[in-house]
Image (cartoon, rainbow, N blue to C red):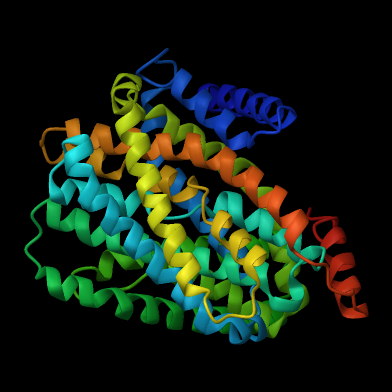
Length: 421
């Protein structure tokens, strides 16, 4: 497995560099490498590596959500809170519902299978959105109205909400005996409980770090490990209490940022380095799960489903921003910022297929769901990344840089340069 992983890393780094030279997101190149080396094309990856792919994809999702938490201050959330919540829940819900209604006719899926597809495709991509928004925040672009922070926060909550809803729908599809209405009602409870636990753990970590003063690398390892353990806690508590482990992961970063801002920026810089490896694993592993024949058959029908969903989402984003301080151009920027699909689709896109295979069910619907999920990445990730950069540079107005902002930038640039040995 080690040799195959080494080959995968080298090839993905080369693909990332090549695609960036072509002004395309590198993640699309990594996805292509995974497809090429996967069992449906060259069948080069070892079964052991494929077997741990789901866990590796989940760890990558934890890394990016932790980084979001380290970049969102309470003051910013207070300013954009109400609007952020609208953008986090309403557009994703409508996109998922529209896909659920369209997919049976266009793709031949059942209504519940279409709902599973909708719960995957409806999520936006923190892998594309978060780095772009952090870049705008570092340059104080759109800072006067907190536009990048609002987009980043709502996109992250959107992802967690969609993932929780997806787990409920997958349980229904596999014949779970729990009351579906009770499961749906548990979504807000799981979000609140997960956030509360994460905030408490973050506060305790600050005290522990102050007492023992470990190096930044050890701190980020502790935070990441605890976040992963919270996902395990979510599985253990699933039968009794709804609990969103991904929300807890994000809340840990938020709590540390509120209490130790310098430490939070330092840990965020470390996580940015870990993300280089996590991104390779995330997109290459999902590419390896893609059945190329099924993806080809999905073709125009799959594109139609994705396009209809994006139109529904864009309409709701526009409606959610009515009455806000944003002008028409800034609202358009927010709309295109929610185009990219990548991280969540890569993390959970293969989930229905694997679950169907484990349950001994027909895997055809799962393969089609995964194919459309990957198609959404290939189409929307490059388009969305380009649109965010193009529109953002022309729409977001730079705010004056304060002494505090300059100090933060200096801290960020030197974080991680310490000797960790």
